[in-house]
Length: 222
Image 1 (cartoon, rainbow, N blue to C red):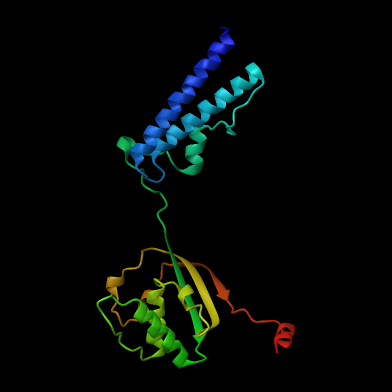
Image 2 (cartoon, rainbow, N blue to C red):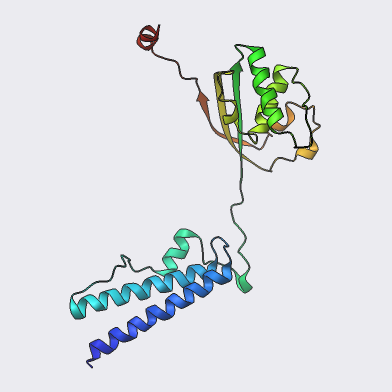
């Protein structure tokens, strides 16, 4: 056996060992995201595979199915922010802690109050437990919209229905000093949770306009 062949065999053994190490780290992590041990095992397996592929190409002109490039562990840690656990496995303190606030407002026109209430009552009935036979009636437009939001897990997408005609809206993104503390506002305080603090910094706003058909499209459909 030539020295080149011995080197190739040793490189293959490193691939096998690295693959086993990677599998062991994945099992131990149990689905944790950005686990340091998994990342280090991944880099080891990647680089062992790359080395074996290069040696195989040099020795026999053959390649493996592994399309990998060598990874510098130090550069990768700095770029992706993983594998940088502190002493004794403790994460280093983030030198730039930040909280971002997204405030959104969207207005709607109600073409038919009766139609909106019917849709909201249907949503309320569908959410009833099996042991309840009759739902309380929806009495106001605001109650109807709130019912639809609750049925849609709070997403504004739940209001994309024919019974509501979207008007202008706005989204504002701010960097804030502290996260929202709901306990500090009463339930009937409509402005407090949305009012920016003096130290908050507005990054920008996005204006939303409803889609309006072009004049020629209106003519074609009329």
